[in-house]
Length: 225
Image (tube, rainbow, N blue to C red; front, top):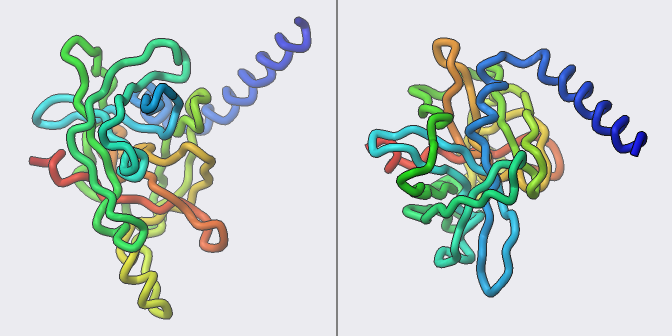
């Protein structure tokens, strides 16, 4: 029991130190990060991360399209890592993912939320993309764990002058110098605009070799209509 208590205390101290160097608005944005669950064929499990966002049509849940592409008719739920037993039904409304060969066309999923759901933590969409070298962040919930705040910098668009195939597939997609883990897909990428956090992209993948970092999808056009 003492070892467990010591472990919990150590984790709390560690994360306290990590978060101490982060902007407070970004730390508070944790409230918008949720795990995405899928129920199909009698099985249920966490598949990705996602973020509550504000739109003209009300709050929506935003994740990655490849998370739902194989089962668009499944039942989806969201939960926070702090209370994984509280599942909220989220209905898949729009999604885009035509495979890695056409990745740059988009990789996103938008869910409608139930009427009584408290979405006061939802984040706005960014008006602009970050400048190259600008600090960016993401709250990721790897495979159902408590969300982890990851920080890095925006690296601009990916281009492959020596590989026409790669350029055709992902040329022009956004890239961030940031570390991730399994289950990070779907996380909203954050920057600060006028000192407030906003979502500018969706974390959808990364490279096993250099350049290390996260590949980001653009935001769904339907969210801006």
